[in-house]
Length: 192
Image (cartoon, rainbow, N blue to C red):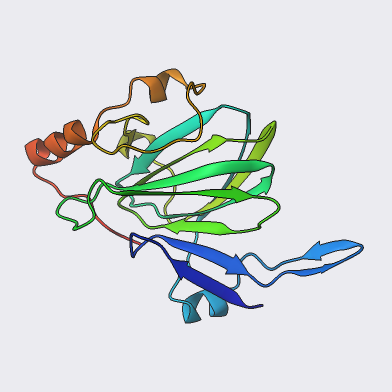
């Protein structure tokens, strides 16, 4: 296996490309191998795997968790989606900046965003299946979201009227999250 980590505009967010072996029968690809990930400076300890399926126009996010801190390695295994990561780390030089990439079953790329980032996606194909490995176990008492259309962040989503859950429709702004951090006098832990 060969892993090719490609830096993005935000140094901690990485696009991960893998060696793919294709022929007329199909393809083979290793999507995780500890030694290769370690050599590429990527995480090697994942404790939870998630899989979601959504229809065209569905937007999920922007979600994050602070205890335990949760990084995510995301890939699209069916269809295509626009994956986004937003830096929400208090005091970060890239606070409020975002990256977005079209990831698909065809291009076989992955996006790594460490803890301290809010993540989300919108579906571009008829349906899409997104799988992600997490560095922290889900804790509903210590998770939240940032509004997908927060004008302070200015994400350029490739869809105009997304289908949202009630929770995502009511998500806070980045400014509200930062006020909450200050009022509770704790800092978002970067974690793995």
